[in-house]
Length: 117
Image 1 (tube, rainbow, N blue to C red):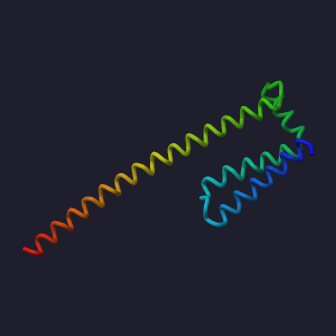
Image 2: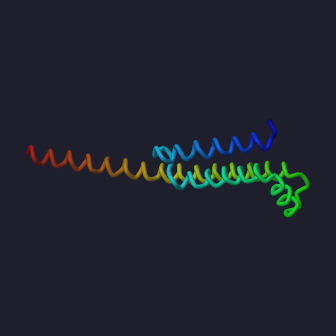
Image 3: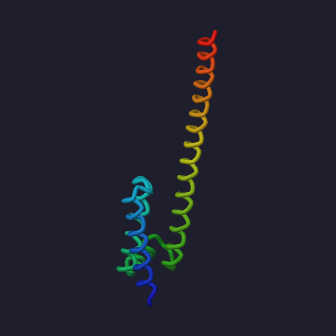
């Protein structure tokens, strides 16, 4: 099995997997779009291997594999930053909701005390 066939199969499996997660509602659209786009790009470069050579020479990279590794590392860093941002945002929302629940519970206790008196 050649590398291009393996890359194509991997891209198709990734595309189908992400699409099935999206259909079941296990993955939100804003995350799925990125993964579907990159699996499509990987499939394109697997089908048209000369395109990666052309693009590498266009940006001045001697070996197309080095360009592929560089782009992959950059993408993984960007995904990590995005997930860290989402996690931080959700932590702030959870903290705010916990504070609101605590205030409401205190208010309920005060109302119960007033009712009993």
